[in-house]
Length: 261
Image (cartoon, rainbow, N blue to C red; front, side, top):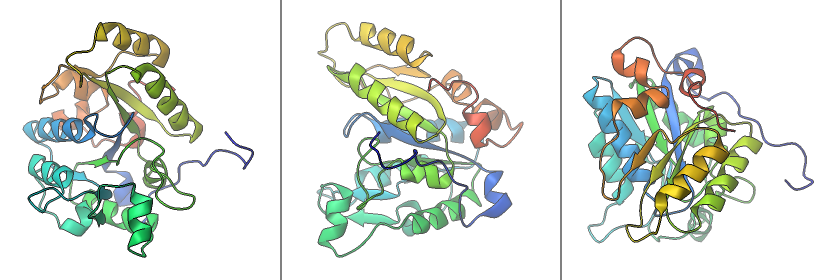
C-alpha cells in the first residue's frame, strides 16, 4: 500500500435499502484478462438456474465490440440467466474499443459512476435471488482517476470470487490479487482454477501451491474447455442453501465457507 491512508473499506449497497441486503450476489474477478471470468460466471448462473433459482448476470463495464456488433461477455451472461432485464441494468457502461475502461471512457468524454452501477445492481437484485457480477480485466483495472475494479464489490458490499487462469505465472498473479482483495477489507468467498493453457507443464502443482498459500482448495478446478460447475462448487462458494431454496444468500453467508484472506 502507498502512504495515502488506510485501505478503502466496503460500504453498503446503494439504491436498494433493506430489500437489497436480503438478496444474494457475488463479484467475479480474475488474475488477468482472458482467463475465463465470463466462462465461470455463466457456469455459475447456469448451475443456479438449474437449481430453480432466479439468477441474473451483470457486467458493469464492458469494452470491445465483437464482429457481430455485440459485447460477447454481456451476451453470454444474459443467455445463462433467467431474469428478464434491460441492457442498461445488465451493462451500464459499454465502450466500443477493446481497451482499458478508463481510457475508453476518457475518449468518449464520459466518467464511470459507481452510483449508477449501484442503482443498476439494486434493480437487478430486486428481481433475482442471485446476481452474479463480473468485473473486467484484473482486480486493479482502473475505472477513473482514483477508482478501480475492486471499488465495485466494495460499493455493492459483495463477496469476491477469484478466477485464476492456470498458466505460467499464475501463482504470483493470484497471490497478488488475493492481497489486493484483502487490503480493501473485502470477503474472498473462494477461488476457481481455470486451466486455460492445455500445454502447461504440471498445472496441478500450481493449483496445489495456490491451495496451500491461499488457505483453501479451489471451489472448482475446471479442465480446459469445461463448461459447467457442480453443486459442490456452489456449496463451497456459499450458494448451497440458495439452490436448495432454504435461504437467500447474503454477503456473510456466501463468504463463510472459505475466506482465504
